[in-house]
Image (tube, rainbow, N blue to C red; front, top):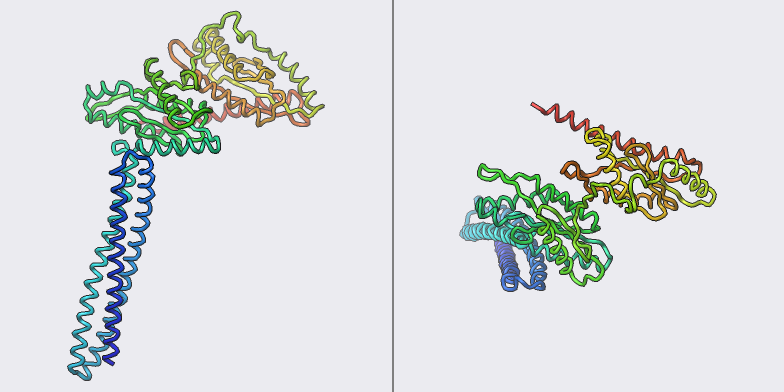
Length: 497
């Protein structure tokens, strides 16, 4: 019987020895992979090919570390199971030896005691190795994250920017998926640092980083581009949408108050915008155009944005004319079609559409602030505002479309041959044009807000029903906005101490 226990003793010892050797080999392999991964970028930090190789090696190293960590856990469990079995054997031998003590049993006890001691020592070593592997994997993940993150702002760094812009460029080449780029520069930042110190400047950079994160969409990538420059990559974004985003970001920076060491600071930023275009053979051209637009914003006095159309740099926000256009101008409010002209043409178009099956849509437009501006600033100012509105609306329409003035502050657009989907595209262009246009009101720039309603001709529709349906949509939208404003106002009153 003791011979059987001795053979079992030998098998257990061999199992433990094999497990220890496997752990040592695995740990050494993990350490070698980790060392290789951390050395590569240090030697070739500026090489893009090495950067890609580093990331792949880092990923493989983390997976290998995880596998080795799992192996260590399994081996610890095996050692525990062996220890329990050996302890059971020891108890059985003690019980047998208590009945028939002998020299052979004493020798077996001594051997089993050594086995238990060896098991405990191996268990401790395995536990230590498991902790070391886990710490190694955590360090590797931390290093990979830090390599792509700016330590001051926690934004993506220039390395991450270069990778993402290259990826979006490849996507554009393959699928023609649009992509826009914004470059933002904090105005007079060097002067700010000299006046208030670098710690205050660092706090400004951190706060601007937070503004970028909160203002950007989830799919956008805000980055610390370098120094006081930031960049935002806007995937699947046309230039008109990027212009709106740029102005929104500029206003967010302008309204931000930075508090540091008991003082409050305000800063502004200049922005350049560009998008990928035909003829771009690398992302460098996109960055160059956005950079040129940025410098145009600085030349224009800072705290503004410009966008590059491929030829020249234009303001992100277009200021509409504040005076009546000259008599030879293509559009004035007096030159817009009247309601009776619109209705007469609509009647003919409705009849034609019913007879030939040609689609027909109309759009009802309402300038939201018109009644308030007429009351506070007078009819002359309100009239000039409507002229500006008619100017940019007409410029966004096709030649066949007809713009007509209805009641005060309301217009209608006839869209012959247009389905509701096509009319939506026209409405979207008008909304973008309105969002990028401002009106000068007593030396203050005021953004025009417009509500629109669309209706497509149905088989049983008359001209009156078609116009009524579009107007109802506008009135519903206006009522909804008023209810939301009233709700917000009541909430503020309820919170007022």
